[in-house]
Image 1 (spheres, rainbow, N blue to C red):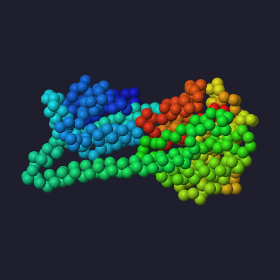
Image 2 (spheres, one colour; image 1 turned 90 degrees about the horizontal axis):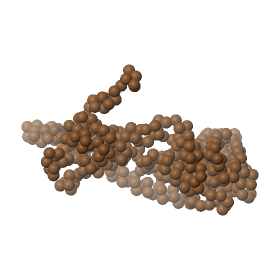
Image 3 (cartoon, one colour; image 1 turned 30 degrees about the horizontal axis):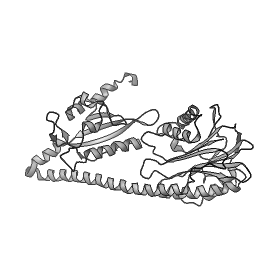
Length: 412
């Protein structure tokens, strides 16, 4: 049977259990008939309304956590693009026939993303199994089936304990994230103009995950010999405090090497030798460009990194991919790295970035590179600071990226 012959609306209605589709704004886009029956709401009372407007927490229960727990799960799905199975929840709902009266209800929810062509979460599949009758049957059994009552109560208790443990872990990870970001900020150069001869904008955006931060870096350095600068970005495999420490070592080493190297390839050769003796630098990547404003040339070399983009003032773009090599620690010392040179027109724009800007799950990398080039062309008249913000806004997922992102835009 082909996809065209499948009635997906009928499939949706036939899915086992209560199923709803939520937009990224947490508004009901659709519900199946079992969801309508299970909640006691009509389709008109659900579709088009925010989930927590329809199902708020019980105001008579100060210990109610159902809404908060569901909200946290849905936000995790939006942020990570991954399925999230929740622990057993008590989530009371108001009796639709008797406003102000709340029914004690128990649910087992699972939330899963539906990704759009751009890799962003387009919808959330919210599936719930109601287990209220199971809990009530346990209570009715009483002494007649004491063993079953004890086992079911233990199951519920352990589920709540697991959820509380997960919350504590998330808070601990959040504290570690704050420390890692502070370290990252201290080691990266501040936004500034280099040599006062051109305009440059730099951005760093951490990932939304608790510790998925601090592997990416950027650098801008004045080079010896006149009106020349070096512009680089890099990516360390790994996250958190360890990645921030490795990032700082590699950025500082490349900054020093660039000031004395004959060209970007030699600077990356030196950095590669250094990476061999740095724990945590395995498979790290970097790309560096030497810009000569007098000769109007860009000399570049890449160690396993995505290619910079050069955009002419008229919007024509090219990816600088003629000197791409293996990651920093993967090349034997005697073999020099490749290097290439290109000319630029005054008013052109050079863009360096890390993979968090363009990579999406289950999508070819070329699609992300095309998005970047298209955004640069459409907004080419913007100054670098505005352009940097525009590119991040258009290319990063609305819920935040799952990998950190570094971006440099230089107006030549």
